[in-house]
Image (cartoon, rainbow, N blue to C red; front, side, top):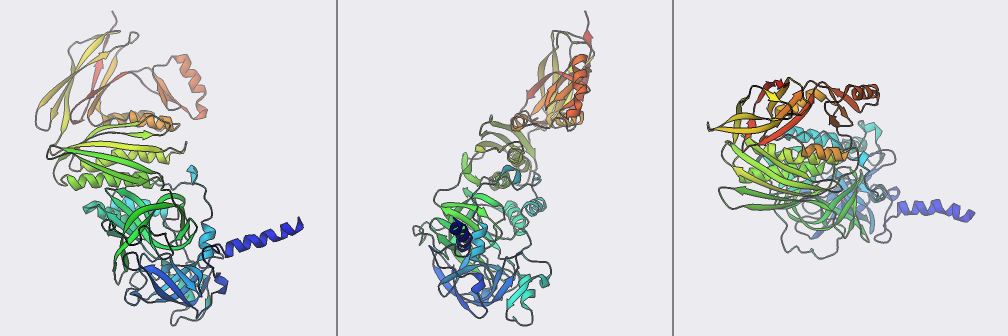
Length: 615
């Protein structure tokens, strides 16, 4: 027993220092010395792995935090003399005497063509990505995703949630350089200038201002965005096993749109794959597709040379995104959110689009929004008035479906339509009540190049008095943008116990929602995921007029549910229990509500006093 207890720490240390002994012998960072020459592997074009040299300059100790080191090297070979370190090389393995040292992962950044790179030690890559547990709901990436998105709001959102932890101390003196001097700039000063190599972000199918929106937002988070097409159908190594030095991709969107990052495989240990040598977004546990990648060409640049690539077939799942590496397992692809979008127009045939987006608390609504707005802007005019009628549903696991049905019109209806679809997904995935999974999203959008707006002009009653227990016809006149008058009639039912006078309120969805928010303030916040789904399905719509019959009798909101016209005795009980925070009084009670569907996005509000005949 004593022998077993003594040997366990030794075995654990061996597992950390030589994690890939079954796949490739490893050289721990303690054995790396200045003057050594390593051999690197990466893809410069297509899928062919080529070699380059890495002249070791020394080791930056504590560069990435306590006991986190970085090996400093000058690269040589291939196009590196003219390009410097290339975006997309992240993860390129470096070997010394046939033993794996680590992954090329850091460079001097923009405007430097000097091929000086930082190499993340392989043992730190493996150690950081050992966990396989999913990300708990309470620790998922959180942000205030404000829709509609702009370049500024997208960049701010990505920075807020995914701002990379500064990989080096702010002061060069905090970095200790174990090696020789590198010239005019000392090793510590040079090390403090290194930053993660930019990750090429390949965009296929994004156009115009949406492509600029994606590019500007992701560029601030360590990516090098570029438009590209799909990978060639006959990739040279498409069926070969994944190997160190191969190009690899992290998928975010697939189907009729593609979006994802590319880098290089560092090591393959059985089915386990290690890559990048720095974070993709440092999310911790993830479920992102692992794909093959094809490198079309290199793009030399004084600012930031990059590999121009495309994502290929899905070959596994990246389940860890950590400060020193991303890691995943070959085999099954992760579950994605399937989106079907049918676009109908009177100018041509109906078109059907299919997308799949990653399942993630931030990325799912963000990429859903971008996919929808990009499709609409790609096929519909961007200038002039147009209209989009949105219908569809989102199937939610263990909850009722979310039904979409609303009209958006004006100069930028695509923004409103995409926000309408993405908003409930955002709040469901960000809710703190329980993890929610959306199974599918099916949408149909009917477009028109004519304005479909109307204004509520007048409301009236033909009868001067209403009688309790009877119905009274209420007339509503709306005027369209073309000047046509449209008359609607709704029968308002008066409760048998009603006493007057009552108030009839007629309003569009936006005004009614504002009135309700003022009345209840924050007390009607949903109390669980089921109430969230219910709230989305009851949300006020643009193509409706709402009629509310209101009395001066008091009510209350109890645990998110509105109770109207309560007796005084019940209100007294609720008032005594208000300290719990789940009960709030209402100054008036809604005795009835009616929704009148229209073919227009209607606006306006009117109020009528309704006397009650006591006889």
